Amino acid sequence: MTTTARTTGSRFSDRTALVIGAGSGIGRAIALAFAAEGARVVVAGRRREPLDETVRRIEDQGGKALAVTADVSDAAATQALVEAAVEAFGSLDVAVNNAGVFRGGGPLADLSETDWHTQLDINVTGVFLALQAQIRQMRTQPSGGAIVNVASTFGAHTRIPGAAAYAASKAAVAALSKGAALDHIRDGVRINVVSPGATDTPMSLRPGETEADRAERVRTALPLGRISATEEVAAAVLYLASDDAASAVGTDLVVDSGATA
Image (tube, rainbow, N blue to C red):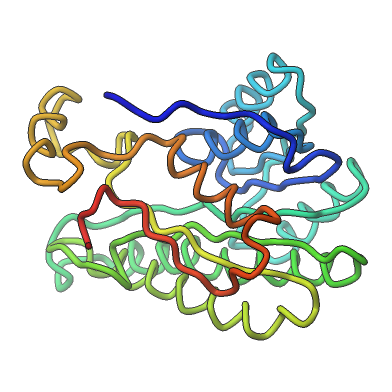
């Protein structure tokens, strides 16, 4: 796959970035990108081992990172996560809420109530609880902060069969983010959304499909002719979190190879 080259800089020097869902895929790419631009990075998720791997990669680049396990669907755990970030590095300047799960693949009438609640608990309630804890900390800081929530093109932008509940949860993330952005911009907290389409992660593979099969399928299915690299989604997140996007408030930035253009 051909991708644009990554650039390094110092947009986030002396800032602390919290990335939830940083154990793999898009979340790990986001954490690595923040570290490459000078941030102290707190990586969070449910399982310790993949978080430790993200921390190792950051430290191998010469960066600073801390791994914290947390269940974002639990208010106390989410509050403790924010407190751990501030205790370790002195502030919370950027937060990225990337945790999410997909349950389904069949008609809505056949979706179990358990799978419905799992998606709402993590994809929506988890973002709600994270936002609350993050905003409460950021609005106490003279410099405020920036939050980027990772939604999806499935939801506010497009739908596909077999993903109604997931789409509903991600559409809720976009709506929640825009409402929170209006509520808290005067507190010095900027909130925006990135909505990725098909990205180079296992989620974009159909059952039994290889990466080569996927590349051939999207060559004609997507206007760009390829899916997005995780680094490209990370670049969008870093832009919205940076001072370069100081007037972006409640923006939903779509990164989907032209699929919903």
